[in-house]
Structures are given as structure tokens and as C-alpha cells.
Length: 326
Length: 296
Image 1 (spheres, rainbow over the protein chains, first blue to last red):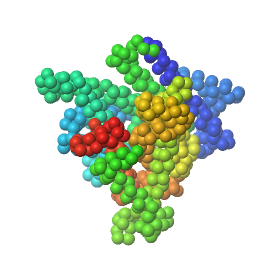
Image 2 (image 1 turned 90 degrees about the vertical axis):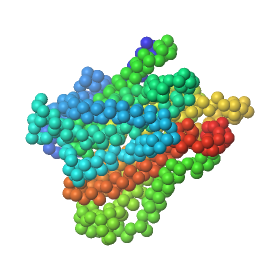
Image 3 (image 1 turned 60 degrees about the vertical axis):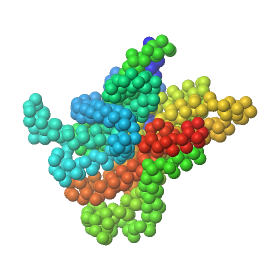
């Protein structure tokens, strides 16, 4: 328990550090930061949003430490301020709207990639040096080294524009209102396929490489040799002796990948004009909507810390050695 | 370090990767000889398809895409290598100091490292870049360098912990060599393969991230680089008006550089950790094992 307590304190410190960066960045800008943020956001803003901007970043009257405490206390009560662009919409509402799309798209893509990548990595490691291994390893290298921008743009060009198989933007047919109808779900699925496949292409390679490396390092272990010597079938040794243990470290990379889900997949969502959190962040950047930008950073940091903590908990449950130690 | 180079020369992945990267570097350096056009100037009608005159067509503003591509390579490579170097220097220095000194120093550095690791990188970069405004390439390199060193520091520290147990380090300590000398001349050469992986990985990361930041509109749009080419092409709706050359040219260039660097990186990884290799040739194995404890 002491171990988990220490981790909680550490994550708390990390979150405060992220919030502190958020607090000081605008104050490092030359001149009057609020006026600057306000003017760079464009002129069509209602004047009341200036107040909102001030409140979001804790620009209250008083010394710096008082501003800092005001800011921190508002963050910890879940108040992320008000959007400048969509004044007076609170940032949490704006993010909440996009949340479902992102969790659906990026969450699904992450889980598919994890399953597919781990399977490919397992098979490639088992048949190390075979043609299959060469094909899997080399394509994994290629897939991980091509920037997501490039993959997304090329997929959009080939399948969206040239072949016309899939729509080139939005999460569903704009003519349809969200409802529990078959037509609506079909439209959502049709719009999701291209970004989903692109994301899987981007994400799978990483899981494949991790799994292959873990697995190869385990294949030389005594208990694997023992299992083979006992005359167990290849499949049984591969799946139940080697892969089960090789999967353990991969679980932590899965959790961290799921932690980044809330960031949406920025680039993919932007290219396919998908209304998720990544796209919301992008629109906020274009409009220099600072409360939304910093809110998004805090939400993503929090998600990341929570999933890291879940990894710690799972390790305590899975690895008895950690229970007793401080 | 020497064995690493010999290993690289015998590894097919490394050779292909090196050839790709060198080709791109060469094209970038020789840019003025390879095109007669000014990459920033209007040299033709807007959105002309590839032809003998403009081998990769023109942008919406009538600029030559090939000229922009090869001049842009200069920026992308410069940012990639500058940021990669900065990330590696910071990460390696902190990693070796934390691993070798141990104690309080290690605790402080490790705490910092772990903290930087759990704060998601890309949004942090976006926040910083959006406050900077339109960031030039070297500002982007600096931001990348200062925020992305943590992974390198962690792996270098872990490697240092195992190297510092070796006899030659103990011997150097007994002979009374100063700590900085042990870290620089005993530890550093022995963690060199990790440093190499870290450097190449950081260059890949920096090239991709710079292009991404610029594509998202956080860079200086007047700079010529692959990221701003993507940004401008996207802004001109190049895909929907059918000007595929405008957007695919920088895409392919980025993919090619990424693949070249990754092949190099995987090769270094394989040489440092021979079990990972795809084509298990005994000859290579034994030569590696002979050249120093099987680890390079």
C-alpha cells in the first residue's frame, strides 16, 4: 500500500507541475498577456469574454501567489474556464461534446491495434528468422516510421478522393440527426472506417515491435525450454508459456496508449475532419482559444496519470514482490 | 564504438537506411544545383500538374514543388538533427550523472525525468508553440529539445547502472580518476549504442513532430520546409481540387526519411541486442560475441 500511496503523491505532483506550466506560460509572454491572448483570438469576440479569459488563467487582483492559488483551486474543482471563441460555453462542455466521438474512434483503434499487434509480434518472434518474421518486422518498421500526417493524407487521397469509397469528412451524414436509427448508425460506421483503419495502421506497428522483442527475450528462458522438453504442442508453449508472460510489459504500453486516447488522435482527426477532442484542440489552436487549449492539456494529463496509476495497481496485483516493499 | 561501426557495415538494414538518409542529405545540400527555380518565387501558373518544366508540378501560388521539396529538406533535416542532438545531449548527460552518482542526485533527476515522462508530450508542445506564436524552425527545435529528453535519460540511466558495476570502472575509481573523467571516458563509450539509438530515434521524432506542428499551423508559414508545404497545400485544399502532387510530394519525402532513419535505428538496436535480429546468421553472432562480451 505504501507503494501505491507514493505513486499517488507522485502523480499529484506531476499534475500540479503541468498546471503550473499552464499558469506561468501566459505570464512569460511579453506585454499584457490577457490583452495579447485576446487580440490574437480575433476581433469578433464579445467584451465579456475578456473577463472569462482573466478568470481562467487566474488573473485576479493580488500578488502572484494568490493568483496561483486561485488558479489551482479552480482547476481542482473541475472548473476549466470559459471558451473565448464560443463564449459563454464552458470548456468542460465543449470537451464533453467531442469526448464520445474520440473515445469511440481512438479507443476502438487502440484496442484493435493492441490485439492485432500483439498477435503479429507473437507469431513473428516464434518463427524468428522466417520469411514471415522478415515481412512482419519490416512492415512494422515502415508503419511506425511514417508520420501519421502522411498516412492519413495518403489514405484520404486514395480511398476518399480518388476511389471515392469513403466520405472525406465528418462523423456522420450531416443530413441525418443523431438518433437510435439504423440509418444513423450505418452512416457513423461508414464515416469511421477510413480514420479507424488509418489509426490502426499507425498504432499496430508499435505493439508488434514491443511484443516481438519481449517474446524473443522470453523464448530462451528455462521454463519455456522445459515446456518444450515435456513435449507440449508448439501452440501451447507459444501462447500459454511465452506469450502470456511477454504480454505483461505490453499491458503497460496499452494503458499508456489508452491514456493518450483522450488527446484524440490529433492529426487523424484533423485530416478526416472528425469531430473528436483532437479536432477540438486544433480548432482552439487556430482560434488561439487559450482556455480550451490549456483545458485540453490538463484533461489529457489527468487521463494519462490515471491510466499510469491503473498500471501501478495492476502490477501490484500481478507481481507479488511489489506488495511488501516500500 | 568501433565494433558498432563494423556491425553497421555488415547489416543490410543499416546499409539501406544509411543510403536513404545520405541521399536525402545530398539532395538537400546540392539543392541549388538541382533546380533553377527560386523555391519562394512564382515560377508558373497555379496548380500545374507535373511536366518537363516543373517535374513535380506547382503549388497554388505557382511555386515549383520540386524546388520547395529539396530546399525544404534542408530545413527538415536541420531541425531534425539539431533537436535530435539537443535531446540526446541533455538525456545522456542527465542519465549518466543520475546512474553513476546515485543517491540524492539520482533521486532528483529521476523524479524530474518521470514527471516529464507522464505529462503528454504533443499537447504540451502545442500549448508552448501556441504561446510562442508562429515559431521558426530553430525555436521548434529548441522546444523539442527541452521537452523530449526524458525517455533518453531513463534508458541511459538504466544502462549506466549496469556498466558502473564492471571491473574497469572499479579499477578507474581505485586509481583515483575524477568522477567526470570516469563518466566521460569509462561509462560514455560503453553506453554508446544506447546513445546512438536515442539519437536516431530523437531525430525521427523531431522530424515528424516539426512537420506535424507546422502542418497544424503552429510554424512560421513563410519558412520553406516539408511541414509548411503540407500546411499550405492543405490550406489550398489541394486534395479536393485534385492537385495531388502538391500534397503527396512532401508526404513521400517525410515517409522516405522516416523509413531510412528507422532502418538505421533498428539496425543499431539489433547490433546492440543480437537476439532481436531477423536473419540469425551464426557467423555474425560469433563475430559479435568475440568482439567483447557479446555486448557493444
